[in-house]
Length: 200
Image (cartoon, rainbow, N blue to C red):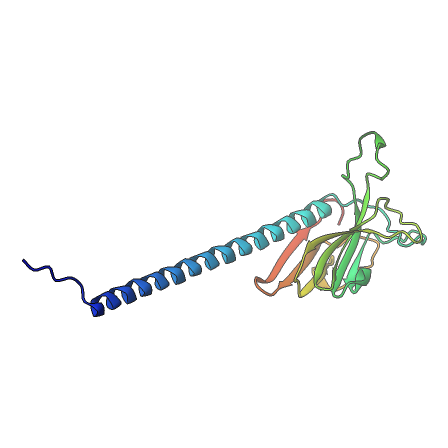
C-alpha cells in the first residue's frame, strides 16, 4: 500500500498557484468596482446636467415681458440681457424675468415674478435669483449652485436676421438662446432654446 503524500515542493507549488489565483481575483474585483464607481459618477453628472437643462428650459419658457432693474437703478427698457462677463461672470452670463413662481394668496414674502440670472464663477455654474424682481440697492441675490468643474459657459443670441450674437441688450427678445457648457470629462454640451411664440 502506497501512503506517499505531497512533497514539500508540490505544497509550495500549490500554494503559489492559489496565491496567484487569489491575486488575479482581487485585481479583477478591484477593476470591476472601479468601473462601477466611475459609471455611477458619470451617470450622476449626466443626470445633474439634464436637471440644469430642464431648469433653463423652464425659466425661459416662463419668461415674461418685464423690464430689468438692477441694484436699485431705474428700470431699463431691456427685457433680456447677457454677454461676456455679464453678472460678473468669468465667461458668459444672462438675466431675465420669468413668471410662474407660485405664491398662493401672496402668503410668502416674495413676488410671483422672479428675476433670474446664470453665470460662471470660479468654475461653478450658478443661478442667481431675487425675492423681488426689482432689486433694491444693496440687495444681494440668492445663489444656487448648479454644476461644478465647468471650464466654460458661452451664451449666444439669435437675432431677427438669423445671426448669432455674443451679447444682447435690446428692447426685444432674441429668437433663440444658445448655451455651450465646457466640461472636462464630458466635453462641450450645446443646447438651443427657442422662446415662446409671440415674444420674438
